[in-house]
Length: 82
Image (cartoon, rainbow, N blue to C red; front, top):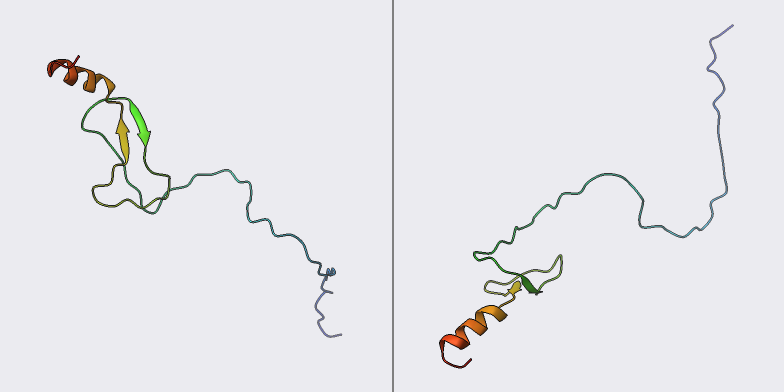
């Protein structure tokens, strides 16, 4: 009697067109390949953010605008306009 391999189990199904789901739910973390940390040299409240995540920034482009109302009022009073 010669050695024989055991029978192989095979599963088959009919191929069908299904909608592609380009997202999955998972638990984990992400790390950007490239990024930047934006800091300010002075303290203040942010009035406007002038970029969206993923935007490219040009040299000299205003990214964040601080609330300057108090500074404008002080300048105006010092110039005699207030």
